[in-house]
Length: 433
Image 1 (cartoon, rainbow, N blue to C red):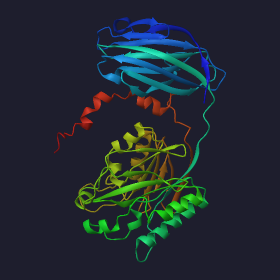
Image 2 (image 1 turned 90 degrees about the vertical axis):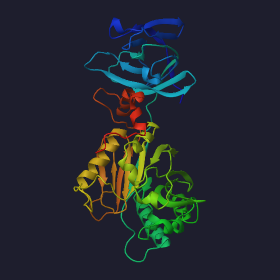
Image 3 (image 1 turned 60 degrees about the horizontal axis):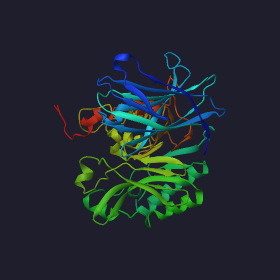
Image 4 (image 1 turned 90 degrees about the horizontal axis):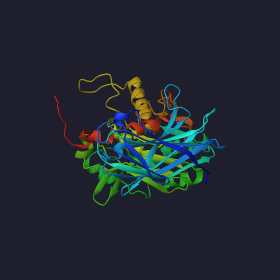
């Protein structure tokens, strides 16, 4: 939506202290150059000031042409600051890099105008680079309306399809019962358990090939038809056959009954799934479904922190997770059969949601512990008794904020130091006892 453009009233260079200040010059009208002073601690840049708009929110967009920075995007930051940049009482919002074409990086952000604000400060920075330069330009600051609420009723269904003989057809009808119950309660999105169509059937190298389905296909059509009729979004996983491959695949069926996205389990349950001949996926796609950014994990993915972090970095707001259990949610760590500890389970899901600012919709095959968790880490609903579906009403536009008023997700991305995380992707494990 177009906003009301605001004009820069004044500009000045800024640094915490002179000895680490970069060299700043307005190389052309509206082009703000920042050069390193040769120090590893070089930190500073430009402060641009704007008047307060009549609108309740502002939107920022600015580009930077970068050259020879020591650590690439790690050496460049932008921030929106209200009134004072001095602590205490700081009120700020990170303006984050949202795209790069060649040497040109685009930064964007939005924030509410706080009560009593007197002016807007846009701070454009070079950070900790002994080399390089950048030129900030195409600065756009607009007053905009507040974002409209995006209300979703999330639902997580857990538990087996009941007693008696198991077939894919009987499991299908049983889980359609979960769908009908959730639709009657007004659910917008329902997540159901892992490989639920084959619950109770033998699992092994030969049986998986016989049980695996195509997506879409005859086995998914009853659920697609249900979504078309109920206008509900549905997620669950199934064994999927694609030529010679068998994968554990989660799918999103949208309100029109279309397969809006699929996800192949990246972290297979070791060692059984690999030894059964299951092929893993290799990425964590995020799907925009009716205005919500939704990603999926499956079971063992929960044990690996990056499974949630990667989709969160790509803008996911909801993470659906069909899951049987978690090897950390036990009280016995000595090998062999163990129990299921609901307090550990709650802690695992809460920290994962909070650290990644995601709404977690977790559907456990056993039922117990099926839950919905908010980005604040609050368990909004969890199954511990006879109920088989957990529910929660959320507003995806309402982002949790830090004590300095920034969105937590913005602050988290702003402080990340990507070049320092190379051990995560090196493939080498050290000091294993």
